[in-house]
Image (cartoon, rainbow, N blue to C red; front, top):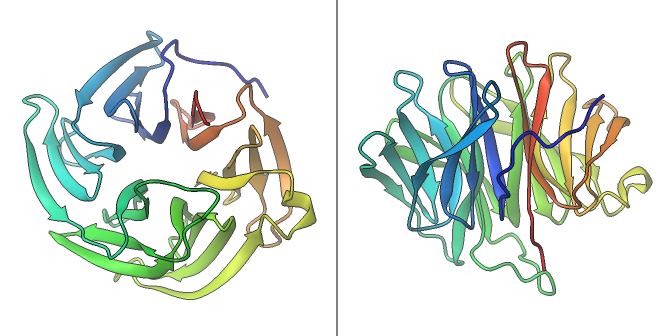
Length: 270
């Protein structure tokens, strides 16, 4: 397995990688630079698709038109035209605690899933369940999992019957039964708690994740400079890949055969 930096651009806080198979390019966001970036592996070049006036959690192209993107900025969700740079407000969220949207993905039915995190993170006084996990579809934002402390990565099995969700604080990976037709979650259980599971204690906190063709989880470990492959049935770590950064942020598979794991990272963390 080969690990290499594929681009020259340095992200302050790289997040939300998404492989666009129509253009064979990788789309990701730099939360703190407030930019949406496209990486072309053929030319090994990166270009800024759009700059925004707030922190971006997610940017995903529409299925019917890749020039249109659904974008989460602070506590709002927009439809962005990357050609004209015009954006249309789709929904604005008002939680009781100051929050913003973080990592997000679309399920197989086309719903956008995204959760919230504190606007300002104080690791000396971590949040205690003041945030939530949502899905957005047909103009409506639905609450799917309440009392989330710090929402992060999510992924689904290939049969779309199981969903995984990371809460970076307190450092827990949850598993849900998933109904693709309705988007309902049920039967929540814990896959792994990083703080109390010996095999995970030196792995920082769970961040972004994805699932491979064999339904094994690939999870980024923020603070430990690692990506791990996890058996979703036993929580056993099958593979650990060390990265040349302490703070990887998220990951997704891409490339012609979806055999390249792209990982975004943070260049500065106090």
